[in-house]
Amino acid sequence: MERTSEEIIELARREIAARKERERDGREVPWRFAFIGLLGAILAGMLLWPGTPLNWKMYAAVHGVCAQVHNVSLGGEQLPLCARNTGIYSGFLLTFIYLLLLGRERAAKLPPPAIVVALVALVVVMAVDGFNSLFVDLFLPHLYTPRNELRTLTGLGMGVSLAVAILLVLNLSLRRDPDMDQPVIGNWRELGGALLLGFLVHAAIYGNVAITYWPIAIVAWTGIVGILFAVNLLIVALVMNYEGRVTRVVELARPATVALVVTAIMLGMMAWGRFWLEGQGLIVS
Image 1 (tube, helix red, strand yellow):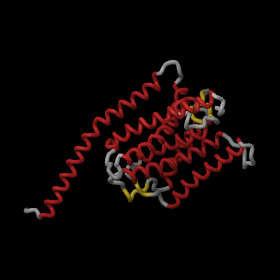
Image 2 (tube, helix red, strand yellow):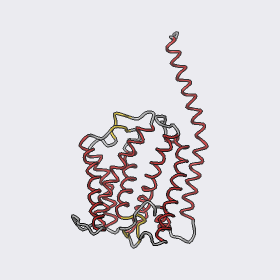
Image 3 (cartoon, helix red, strand yellow):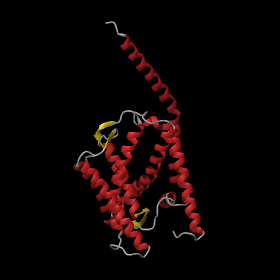
Image 4 (cartoon, helix red, strand yellow):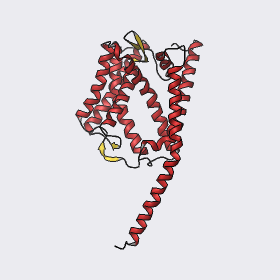
C-alpha cells in the first residue's frame, strides 16, 4: 500500500527523534558509571573511615542541616537526627518508596481535594508543634509542654506530605510523559498506608525496639540527604535543559552526578561551618 506524503513525513520525524534519543542515551552511559562510582566512593568513605563509629559519622555528615537538639535514644544508642527530623525524613523516604511501589513513578495529578486538605493539615500540625517548641526554648508563652513523641509523630506526617509534593514536582518538571490522569495519592486507603508506615516507625522508636535502631537511623539519614539531593537534582536538571525530556530515570545520570557532587559539598561545608562555630563558642551544640 502506497504511503501518503504526510505518513512519510511522520515516519521520517519519528526516525529522527529515535536517532536523537539513541545518541543522547549513548552520551549518558559514561555518566551512569561516574554516578555509581562517585556514590560508591562516598558510601565506602562513610563505612570504612577508621576510628569513628558509623552513627557518629552519620551525625556529623548532616550536622549542618539538622538541629540535633532533641535527639532520641533507641536501644541505648542516640539516633543521628533529632526527634522531629527523624520523623520528617524517615516519613519522606518511606512514603516516596511506597508511592513508587504503588506505580506512581509517572503520576502528575494532584490527589483528590479532601486528601490535599489532609496533607496540608499534616504540615500545619507540625508547624504548630514546632512553633510551640520554639516558644518554650525562648521562654515565651506556649500551648503545652513539648515532647519528643509529638515531635516525631508530627514530623512523620510532614514527611508524607513532602514525599507527595516532591514526586509531583519532579514528574511535572522533568518527565516527557507524565501521567496527568493519575493522582500521586488516589484515595484514603493509600494515604492510610503511608501513615501506617510512619506509625510503625514511631512505635519502634518509643517502644524502644532495639533491633530497629540501624534501619531507622539509615532510613532517616538517607531521607535527609536524599531530599537535599532531589532538590539539587531538580535545579541542575532544569539548568541543563532536561525539562520535559526524561522518560527513564537513567537518563538523569549527568545531572544526578553533578547534583551528587553539589550535595556532598553542601553537606560538608555546612557541617564544617557549624562545628567551627560550636568550637568558637558562638553557638551551642
